[in-house]
Image (tube, rainbow, N blue to C red):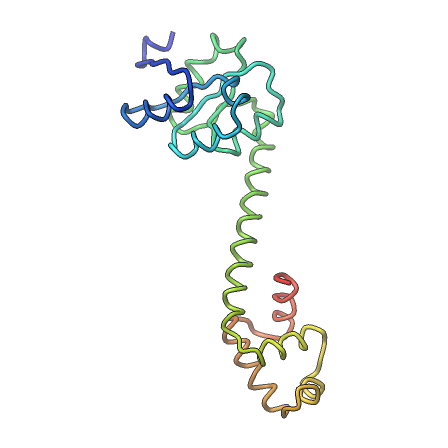
Length: 193
């Protein structure tokens, strides 16, 4: 059915797929879900070769379908539906679209947004931790006391320095961390600690 419009090759295992794709230009990989079910690393191996992939399976749960799309696959269809939708699915995936049940699209988007937010938060924490390394030990001490609600006077007394020195440390902290005030400092420390 596909061979009318496409060149079709059949490959039986993941190692052959990877070797084949490196040697032959390939638009879309159609992969039997049984291969994915029998080998947990296949998702990552296929993602590493950066190839549009349609999974054809039998009664895969919605969670498995969503996981496949979030993991980098391009679509999913049931074996029973393959004869009627395969040409449409391949055409859609070839254009860069995804192929799955319409009601699952919001769930896939929600998972991707959540994953993106998690990655962004991790990147932000890494950036903040790197910036914290710019602080001297004394500046870190002052910052921690600010975060516990300490006044300049109380901090000066506890660290046996002048209030003017506390203010100088705060100015330096604000510059190094690219923040404006004590509240932002407290929020920043709460996020990374």
